Length: 501
View 1: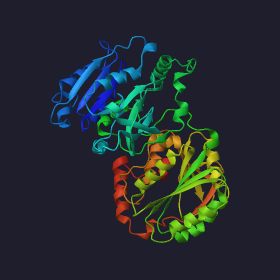
View 2: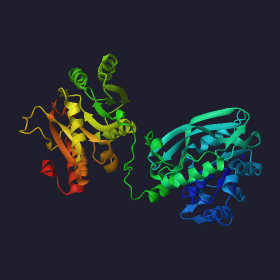
View 3: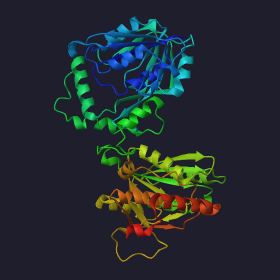
View 4: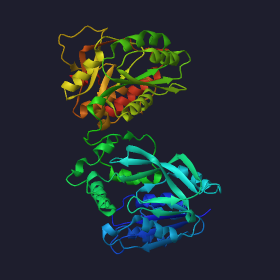
């Protein structure tokens, strides 16, 4: 079944063009590019190289490794844009469609990339004669390749003679025939990873072409994406291979979890996200959960990861959540695993989930073997609200004598909350620590301190923690030895408390 890529290439520098085209090579045997800026198009060199074909190596890209056996048809059609206000994207796409010889059209922009894992499924779908349109979904990345909006499904493949393009700027296909919905397949839009000011300029241009009121007039380009970023989520998948090099180059100086200081939620949604990891903890949970319910005095989301419990741990939590009446417990989710995994990986999975909940401004960890005292949570939050230089604040373990002061003091304990922005800046837990052999938190603390924040204890936040309940259920001595050695290798010492002196 023949498929033709239809793509419009304008005067904008397109850093994702090569990845977009390469991602479709395994699917298409015809390519039509509409050049809307002939003679002044910074992308034309690439198009000419691509047209000259598959044995040309362009910046480490060898096309013939992906290409079909017979050289595909490649056409570059000039369509001068003229005055922007007179330009129609629908007409440009129609020019590509009417010059297409293949049975199917693949619609893809120069900043949209297919994932290699989906090529076979898309090709197979075009072989089903019952359908004329194939609809998938896509990831729409905003500012960074790890923040995305999940946008509505879109048609991506259409039978060439069963549709036409309408509308000037935000052109849409007007089609007939049956639609096959493959929403498990997603393609990737990277155009808004180019920076807010450039996106702003393009939006202004589109508004002029479309004849709409200039509603962007007077707006600050540096804040134009705020509202859209506010509903973004953290992308936890894997970007297509063809674009990973581009992203690495563009974001080489940006930490994986770092974001700009842009308001991302209203303060009314300023929740705490708490991770609870369980493993055969029914006896502990029966004692802990009532104290948690009685003491939650701040809006909270709880995420539970059960590591393959063979007892009634999960049922106890589910039943408790169904019957509990504390209005500050906004939501509870349970992720059931089948086996014990390393603490670092499990913590990262749980923290990523909570960080994807944009209402959570603070991320924390609680244990099944804890007993919570009144005010423990609001006291932690109040410390972070008052002391802006504290990145991680821990409860005071009531098995220890209280200090002479009620002010935060340097140190760390196992019940804590961390500013979401700190985790976005420094990253999560080092997954090279194995099992539950310790040093994971020490490593995180150290990175927090290096970035200029403090790790502290709040004597007014009281939690009893018996400790080591999960670790004591099996021999973790080898893991502890390994983790100590890795920590020593990484930092040159095994400091713990001395870090806070």
